[in-house]
Image 1 (cartoon, rainbow, N blue to C red):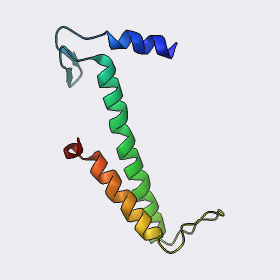
Image 2 (cartoon, one colour):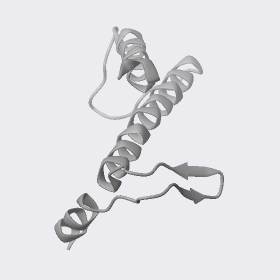
Image 3 (cartoon, rainbow, N blue to C red):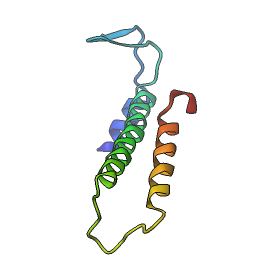
Image 4 (cartoon, rainbow, N blue to C red):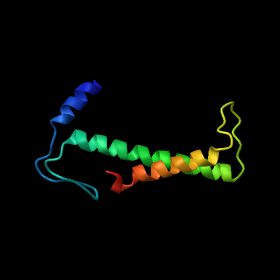
Length: 94
């Protein structure tokens, strides 16, 4: 069913600009490309917010209870994840 939906969206392309609330969907733009681009653009900011939340929790003294721990370089991992997520969320990264 999902495959059929994607095949149908591949051929969908409005001939005129479509206005939805404050958003204008441009004409002659493939719907599937727009769908994938919106999906991908949501992944990076959600990872960024997760990394920021983990950094704030660790700064407040949170210690994980599970068996897997990052040990001493946990701050380095957090900063690396923050940097990667920030750069991948940037409009200049494309």
